[in-house]
Image 1 (spheres, rainbow, N blue to C red):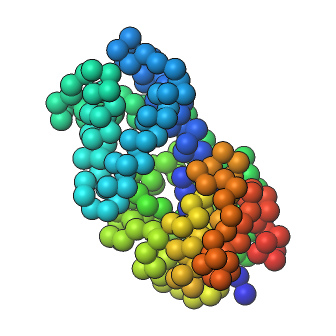
Image 2: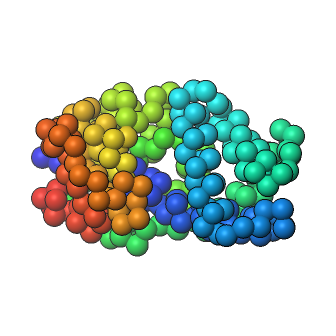
Length: 240
């Protein structure tokens, strides 16, 4: 019996990629001609830096503020601008203002959560990120009131896809992994990681996502991972 639905936050419930794209283009425009370029090129470079530096943070190679400074420093260097650590922090803070201004939920998020709640399913979030920042994000997009617990890697000291973070979430709810499902936009980090921890792993394969259209690998099939293209499909998949 399904008692608990856990979700990834960024690009599952929250439109992170869209906010990043809009935020960095707006920030570059404010910075001036040194950062001029085609919006698609600006967005692609910032995405590359986010993926590389943020995963170094998740691996313990950089602290949270360090990965932010590293992203700012590298992006500025591409424009021929050298930043001190203090300047890099200020640069990133200015970018954050633009990023925050673009925060929004995916259109299918609240309807799916409402249907789960109506069916008596408890709701939580597991995120690879900083607890304070992700809490701020959830508060801003009116998600906190719908989520019973937020489990952040920065709080518990382990990251997805490690089994322990999924187990911590289930323990916090007092629910067995076999009675829980986890939904996320990253096949390996989210769906396969959850399935290996004993939960029902659901891959949200959104159009435009980083792995959209990828064939499910054999290990995912063996683990029972399921694919959906929208959260609108989730209640039926879970038998609700």
